Amino acid sequence: MNEQKTIAISEIEDKHELIAEVADKIWEYAELSLQEYKSCDLYCDTLTKEGFLVEKGICDIPTAFKASFGNGKPVIGILAEYDALSGLSQEGGALEHSPVIQGGGGHGCGHNLLGAGAFAAAFGIKKYLESAGENKGTVILYGCPGEEGCASKAFMARDGEWDDIDAALTWHPEDCNEVVTGSSNSCIQVQYTFHGIASHASATPDKGRSALDAVELMNIGVQFLREHMSDRARVHYAITDAGGVSPNVVQAKAQVLYMVRSNHVSEAVELQKRVDKIAEGAVLMTETTYERKFVDGLSDTVTNRVLERVLYKNFEELGVPEYTKEELLYAKKLSMTYEDSDHTPGLGSAFDIMYAENVKGLRAEYAKQCREAYESLGDNEEPEDNNIKTVAGAKASDKRVGGMNGFLLPHFEGEAFEPGSTDVGDVSWCCPTAQIHVAAWPNGCPGHSWQNVSSARTEIGHKAAVHAGKVICAAAIDLFENQELLTEAKEEFKKRTTGGYICPIPKDAKAEAVT
Image (tube, rainbow, N blue to C red; front, side, top):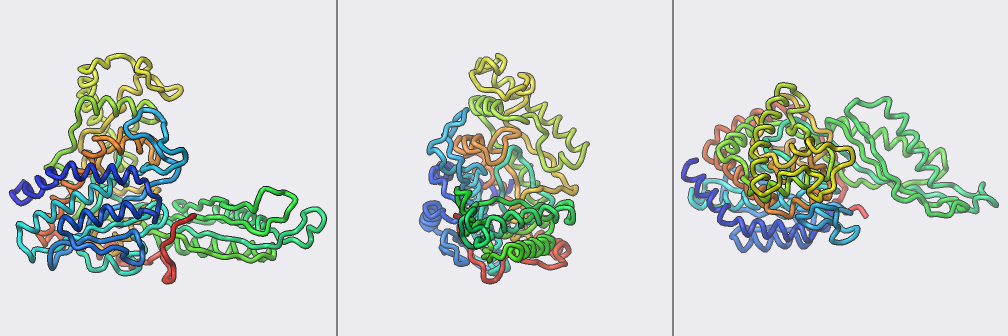
């Protein structure tokens, strides 16, 4: 790497302890969507001390912020997240399910690491800008709360926050090291609260109007809708209030939360309109009334190959995190506690047989190195003798190939699709955007699990955050130094977004926590 990158990367390495400390504090706070007040304050206070210009509460979201350094163009945005998930409290570094607070929150998606890695990248870029000169450009670290239950980046897109930046970069903890590509599902959440008339269900049933009937009829209507929507569309629901526990009372209030997904945001918006009509039909059939509350919405992701290649080049140059023998053994043991620890990692593996075969070869080669590490620590027995609970029916040989993926996957440039959703998609409709995955837990570790929470509070997680920061920082320096890359990225962006951005957030909607 050139001298400028070397200096910037060294700055990140020098702040390894601070980055890990912040990641661990966010892990401990484990604050849910739009309730991340301690996490937001921690970032804002630390960034202010480090010389960034910090603005808290952007786009009318109290736990959102942006921290800027530098002057002029280009402007590179780095995206941070820091919300946790409910019910996933877990002891850090443990090899069994052990909640710290029963029913409490936990970072099952690793957002304590995600934010810390973006934080790390901002430090490195700031160091580069200081050495390159005042007018070289600007870096903005965006604190984006509520990815799991609000989609704050989509609210920011509606308010034009992304319109003035030249490119956005981010990352996400995963079970492998790769550059992210392809599309994802868009998603819209709406809450329907039906109001009826309470009455004695036996003595005067004719006087009652059941809100629960309206919920059930709405659900039936949506079931029939499923035959007449796109293959990639999905509609999920949860009855959040069934009207009480007394069957002899006609329920006067009932509530259901709906989530509509489709590959393209324009399709999701149209599908949501059809679900709204079904709610109106349920009201007519039951002679009830209803309130419709928009919760959140987010878009599919737009690929940008130019930025992907910049990220991959720097990922190749920097390599991947290295682990101690003890860390490798921990990862191996953790992978014994869930199914599918031998799956083939990588977005491209599901879409290209030859790519998947290549990845299997890389895994097999790395597994040999790991076995040597296990044996050097005296762990040469079968997993059943390690006092670790194995998955029912699993063979010991299957578990031998679990553990970390300590290698970089080839850059997949085919068509890929993730059925999940992320509000990074809305950023990608407003400016060129790209992201990477860095291994923060063992192969096949299930998303939103206690195992994720456990690993996110270890040095394996810390190393993922620091390394992600280095890759993003180095890629950003390339964009500052070679603005032809940005020009190419913008040209590709224009071609891929010719249909225009359809924001799923209504003009009057406010970002609010779901309670």
